[in-house]
Length: 384
Image 1 (cartoon, one colour):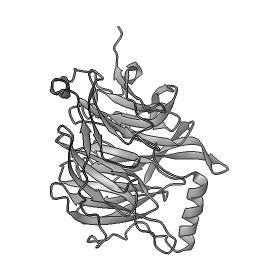
Image 2 (cartoon, one colour):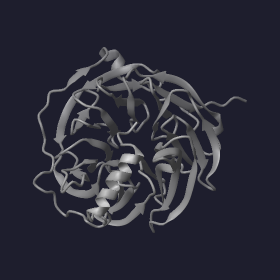
Image 3 (cartoon, one colour):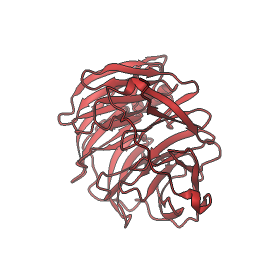
Image 4 (cartoon, helix red, strand yellow):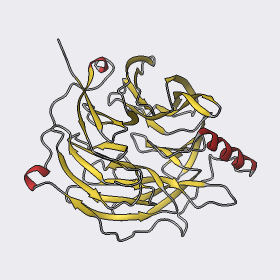
């Protein structure tokens, strides 16, 4: 579950920001990094691994891909995890290893699991606050994690080595590698000014970890996603706006305005559509129905709104072939839609769910979270 305030508090601060004249979210991009950009910090992590014979993940089985014509056969087949509260999960590019992370008042450990067997393959310790998000690099060599302790950490996860730690003005809650693996985007809280809470996305060069530029927003950056070709980055959310930035020069070309806060964003595999996870209906400033908004990435125009979730939608992802849209709300409700007409194809409400969601890059695994810290693993099970 992502760290965002209630809709009541968000409404108050957004109105305050508007009264202060902070009403242009779309094009105020900093061409160069200011002197307060993050610097590398030397921290000593700890790593706990199983014996060497069990550290390597087993070969990933061949699965029926999760797509529009197979989602009706999705089943939970395994649960793994022992975290205090699960906040984020991510698969390696080959789908063989799952990373899970979170915490609340303690237990900020990142856990690594062999997805095929469910066995632990190690842990990464070093954060001192909630780990809000994790992401593997496209080549599978690195794992990035971001935390309320105001750091982003980059790990060689196989050896447990901390490659670098980047410092920020406040908590950071979203992270993504570019598709080519050359840059890393980190989103979170920036330095406040005149009672307005600023946020930003910081872009780093992978390897040197030098800051390239900074993209400004407000309040916090819950939603963050690169387009498949790496030309665009979408980000924002707590301000109720999601920006579409052009990565060649950091210019904001569209602002996707929402009625309520946005917790996640995903871009379709063909790069044509942005899906944003938000709230559809409120009562007394509390979300009573979650929803998804669909946008045309080339024009910034709203295509369609989907609703019917019992609570705020936490996470959204497209299937690898683009035929399905998968989303989970804060209460754990899972909805899957066919993207051809956005008709519902699957619904499940596993007890104790919390909205955490991840799809393996090859499309064979789906991971969802639960309030007890476990990750539920799903796959398509054919029963003739």
